[in-house]
Image (cartoon, rainbow, N blue to C red; front, side, top):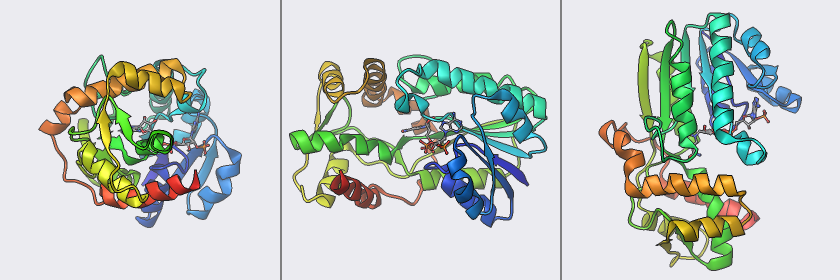
Amino acid sequence: MKIIVTGSLGHISQHLTQQLVQQGHTVTVISSSADRREAIEALGATAAIGSVADGAFLASTFAGADVVYGMVPPAYYIDPAIEPMAFYRSTATAYTQAIRQAGVKRVIHLSSFGAELDHGTGFILGSHQAEAILNELTEVDITHIRPTSFYYNLLGFIGQIKHTGRIAANYGADDVIPMVAPVDIAAAIADEIGLPAEYRKVRYVSSDEPTGHEVAAQLGASIGMPDLQWALISDEETLAGLTTAGTPAHLAEGLVELYGALHSGRLQTDYNRNKPALGRVKIGDFAADFAAAYNRS
Ligand SMILES: NC(=O)c1ccc[n+]([C@@H]2O[C@H](COP(=O)([O-])OP(=O)(O)OC[C@H]3O[C@@H](n4cnc5c(N)ncnc54)[C@H](OP(=O)(O)O)[C@@H]3O)[C@@H](O)[C@H]2O)c1
């Protein structure tokens, strides 16, 4: 099959590209950076250099594709001037128009757990809106991949651990936190592409379900802090901590809302009703990556 992979050689797409090439597919990888061309070609894929915001570029790149894997990059983390919801909507709209124009019949969309909810979920509201925009493609089969919380989000606690000796947030502690590794998401997407297309499908992906205390114990053991604790604090304290650490106000507010939905359990209600088989990377495996990043910082 001819498959378009967005997300460059990012966390998910590098693994996905490797797997799809190994399976014998013809893969084109979209990157915004010409510097990535060589690395993409080294994986046996073709590079298409351009932005997912550029509808004309997307339509010409999608021409003749059997499947498009479409993700919305977290551009708003890199450039705080980008408004997250507007970016999700404009990217999903660019994908939708290009898919229609190119006549692509199958889409795998990277969404998120909680994407069925229409308020109170922070940035995940962007995935809710992106699903709705893509679903306007009435002639196209769409799988919405809904991963849980990425392990690499935990890297955001490194500064806090170094400064305060603990993890503290308005979620965690006794809460079960469904978490996922990008390599397990990539495996699920590659598997999905091999299955018969369905008109509309939601597929959850998760790797492990530790509590916050279990996360703290695993991460603490990996960095020589076996007594590391995860403390539950208020929304206001979490917002103040994020702001003090330099997170722009609108991003900090989105994170606090998202965390609050995790703590209440609202974010994972539909996930809990439709649990997938868990992937292979466990929190103890991620702890080694965490320790490497902790020791580098
Ligand atoms: N964090 C979570 O817990 C969570 C949970 C559920 C869903 N998600 C979803 O997962 C996404 C992240 O997936 P990921 O970790 O695989 O992504 P990633 O590695 O953070 O980013 C993928 C790549 O996209 C490319 N890119 C950025 N802006 C671009 C643009 N304008 N046009 C074309 N390419 C662009 C960049 O590579 P180049 O520099 O080569 O262009 C970047 O490395 C989030 O955006 C969110 O939608 C996240």
